[in-house]
Image (cartoon, rainbow, N blue to C red; front, side, top):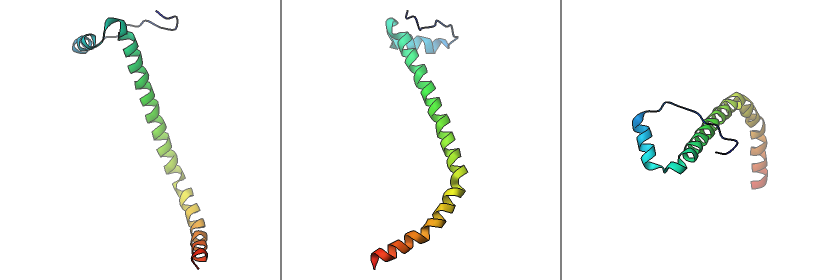
Length: 84
């Protein structure tokens, strides 16, 4: 066992354990479980970040609209000047 590993005991459904043990060789099970847990935590982190980004966009919507309204006439004027 590596020095940075921790042994834990969890209660799991028997059919899940049986299926897992049939699918994964004995020497690979801890690594597979570790990878699955890592992927779960990364997915959870991505979901939190996604929600924070969406909330931030909602918070900034009025500011973006104000900026668009402020610069849109300048863009139209520049477009007319370039097309003349």
